[in-house]
Image (tube, rainbow, N blue to C red; front, side, top):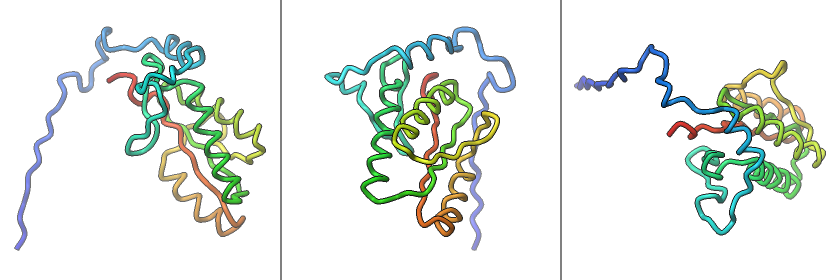
Length: 158
């Protein structure tokens, strides 16, 4: 017996239209706060906080800054070193406003730790499935690898 279920999807009245001015984010301010704000370690809202698929936050709230990206990337380096993972790290990024600055921060930390890092050429973006598909192939060839994807500023509009 097959049961047919219908799911209704509500279409936003903004679908297909330019976003209203009051919904727009000042990308320059996001970048200034990303680089300039220092998290207040006594404020739980500004600590590194992982959600279902990574650290979430916004530079405007002091919860996604260069310091957060550097600390998370350093933790990845420490983990790899502790597990003797020496293969390349595939670093992806998406199209969110701070993915570029966050990628640069991560690359600086990875380079300082001597981690060979592979990124998309020509400042391109990398969909998550591409990273997921690279890891098993590289592991077979080099013995170990890891993947990291930057989805910077995902929550800045909410």
